[in-house]
Image (cartoon, rainbow, N blue to C red; front, side):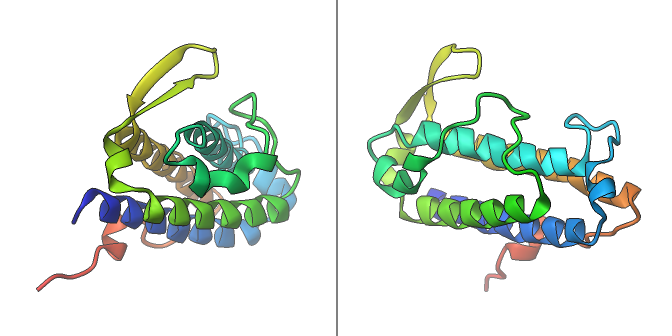
Length: 178
């Protein structure tokens, strides 16, 4: 499996897991979704919102890279959130629609990104304005790892609310080989 195939596997896993979590979340009342459960972003809704916020921030940063820009031009009308807990949408329906759009964009992006770009650096400023340049492939891996980290928190919150999202392992999407 090459690096592009690996990123595409992670992008598809991202979409698969988000769909599972949002399906579970849709079965909850608005009060249950918003209830402060003591998680880092308070509630299940806050956690799902944060994942979309972070994805947006990173994709907006990547859109400044010459090889990434044409693949992320759909983001041009979207302003990068200024806080990690910025509320993107007031309800699950709006957040779900945005999440589905983001997941499609991510799949398109990593599936069409030139392989040579993965070894290049991406220069960006973090939320505090500190400038950095890091390897694009490693940053994409970070984005997927960040999503997994917070989806694990979301899964725990769902369990606390009595909902089992089922298997969450990446293994479910890794194809068999001969």
